[in-house]
Length: 122
Length: 143
Image 1 (tube, rainbow over the protein chains, first blue to last red):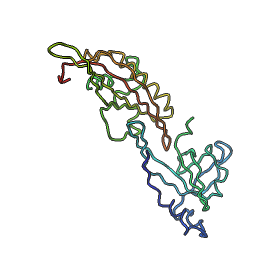
Image 2 (cartoon, each protein chain N blue to C red):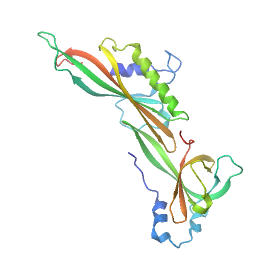
Image 3 (cartoon, rainbow over the protein chains, first blue to last red):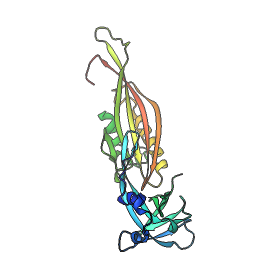
Image 4 (tube, each protein chain N blue to C red):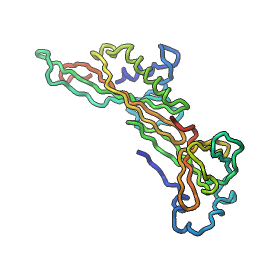
């Protein structure tokens, strides 16, 4: 079981209001976004600088009879900025290195990257 | 159950053949979620106490009990699965010190182990270890 609060931006980007809107204004560092370095393949060359909207929600992991307080960091990106990203990709946001667990293409010009502070298990 | 908790509180890395400091994060029936600073940790629960029907003992009939105890081990570090297995070994070592829990029980038997894993910001894993502690009392005697 997982308790999850949907970040406010997710609903907005998925709404019909988003269609036809220039999304660039949302990825300006003077509004919601911040710069990040992105690697399609971890450790290959210099990262690409992109703008992302970072969020981290509280998440409760239930393991048998006990629960663990985790966080669920995500980064909303322009899909064109992170095309080709896979669960092997890497992103550095605010000086923190994150491993990409999931690539969720929203189909609205944005992609949500689900992140972890740890390399992929297994 | 206090005897079980006290035994596990003695799990200190580098002493008694133990590899982890589970003793500082041993909880009895903890209901509040754990966080990273508390791991590795173990939560102890005495889940069920099944009494056998066919007991003996003459005027003061003895009842035999099978107390099912759960040990929930939780780890969240860079080698979560390795840490979990190491903690499991520590608990097995602690039980082997005295399976009668200072003569309060006849024996302690393993039932099974289950593993859980999740990854978000942290990789977190758990092992649920179930054991049965067999003991006997006079009927309705407090234990």
